[in-house]
Image (cartoon, one colour):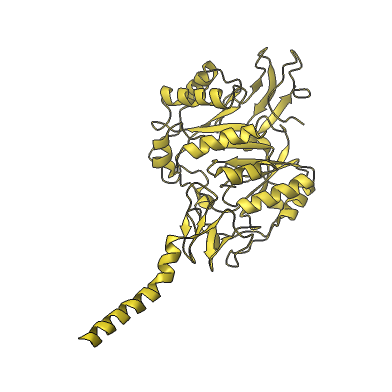
Length: 61
Length: 323
């Protein structure tokens, strides 16, 4: 009986150890006022064409 | 590790690999990354009247840049194809802040506008570009919905000369239902920007049945008079069915005329009607003697009689940046 209880308590401790980091990080996110001035490699690249720049944009504003 | 973005009132808590509501501020390995930095999806030379900015260097060209993304999600958005787009799916040019300033000089522009989408969500790019543009001796203008926290706003306003800020309605339910935002931060942005010396113009898109009642228009104008002053230019803009709001008709011209009458009766000096051709509706008149100072048609300035920021007939000062 005592062995079973020790195993059960050990299992609970292992589960708690696994969960503590993600739960703690959810509870207290890092806070940023500004983002890092980084760029995203996945943004598709489009060359700037002078003929397009010189014309007013199709977008409002 | 999750991160919390403190740029705007949404305060998104962002898990690794995900973005905030604006789509462009991404948690990459526990660090918040502005992924559209130096990657505008639109770069054009517009007439400054197109912003619309009517009291800011009239008749000049303004280099206008935008990246994708917006922290609001207005059902009637006119630029939804880029404002509600994902950065990884939208082609973008490479244009670093120093190049923005050089390009403006090259294209004979006296100012740069951060516009089309929401320049406050690509904040770091806007801020760095503003600094470079100032160093080049040019001016900066924002065209924005004004949904930002006060601390970053104050830092940005050091470099901003003019702003056209949307006030979509003086109604919190309107902001919640139509834009998925709230009213209070926008009002704060208007007051703070003006108090920091930014030349503030306000745009109100008049949407049939949603914000076109006499009371709503009257409340909005009264707030502007009380908190920003009578000299604040107000642009009533015509709605056209777009995006998720194709069920409503375009704003009738008579509604815009009524809005203008209400604004003038509340004491606003400079009231304009836009997105529609109405003769005289885009002209600037002296608030004292009533003489026409600037005559416009569409985005063209046909005549500008303002001299050193004053009416040539009665010498009354005209609010704005004129040279």
